[in-house]
Length: 599
Image 1 (cartoon, rainbow, N blue to C red):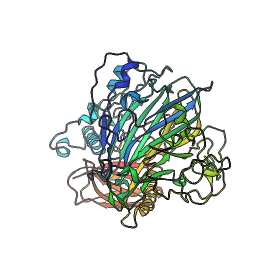
Image 2: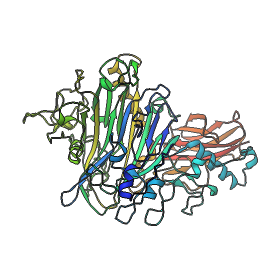
Image 3: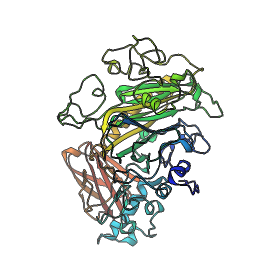
Image 4: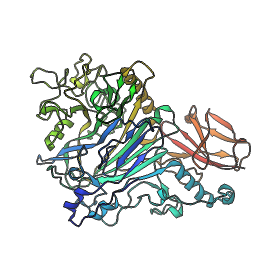
């Protein structure tokens, strides 16, 4: 983690525009990805270079800049916008820190400075911390045996920003496990961060300040938790997931709201990249138009057999309530959304409803946005001049009979014509190198929906990288789609669907305890005997049959895995060293956890 300190004596409205940005990096698996305190992904705010290195150690990045866009209109028709793009510090719409919860949606310079930071913690640190304090409270656990070298709380746990700044703000900020259930974050009493993944970051940012570009803010607060796994298979080793939680802290109701993810994909060299979309998978991706990605503009390329890289939506925002269960159909947002036709009213969530691209250089109507209207247009699948994206060619046409399109370059992955009003079209991909208009950028958006005062939006996304062994650049696209399917299958075993919309924490990682209160959706494994010497027994329910049991030592290292059968399962542990071990079983809807002591 790094924080650049900037001294300033100006009032908040002037000074916040030059706040420097703290950052931290996810580096637990084969990706090293940088996240900044104001929500920017990858791009160094001072040097301008990219920091989304995959594979880690290769020196090659796949993403120059990423971040959120959100726009909506007030009751009197005024446009509101907040976004991250390739701005310098003085023109960014988003700043570090939370907002007040009184409807004024304000903050102070000191609060922004205090939160100009991205916090990082690992699962192994949390498990060790929890195991130590559980041992202290367990009469059957000897601390001198379980922790012969003693225990020191790591700084990452001591510094976790669980509590809000003070009066006027929410009491709690970052999610945490409350060991003694007193509502306060006290690491020396056993409390610990609550995360998903083997490593997670946390930041909070807002759009309180009007920008020099004239964008009027919405008054939103955003909590972000990027996380990653290093022990869940090859697909997850090349994946970074991001949890965004947006709160409307203003007193305004916004309609026609679109939430978007902007990505300036630079797959090694930026001048030979094509953009594509897979609407059925809610995926936007980048790939090379050549089979050898040479370096350019002082940036390393991927060389022979270049990869593909993309972002896909795992969990979109809730759509407006209708009081009924909306039925599935082949139109947007029903086609690629979730919750349609499941007999549950008002749980429908948007899939990606627009996938737009634009370029660094080219005709002015299709280049980088400048005004709030430009950004709003791109979120709604329109060019800067208000013309809609059209099907075929480069997507820009003045022909009044051209077919309007929701998705740029979907190939054959819109088989029902959802993006063209239900009329199936031939496949559409970029087919010819266009060096006159290089360096594509993309924004995929969800909506429309209404955002009420105090309303929350809860969303999950994933960045995924794949490289085929042979077959050229196009083969890597197919490898990417297969990997997206694998990542989605894994992510659907996580408790991302179990929380209420106004809850950020979802469910914490395995707390490695028996008898400690678990969050909703987390159940206790009953393991016997305790202590155990040669084997432990587990009574698996029918719901657990076929799931994997994972055993970890006190550092979080996986020491054994096996697939469960319904009924009594016996697990040999004679080869394990004495100590405290955690056990986890994850099914589609529930995480089971427990612990045992090996003599």
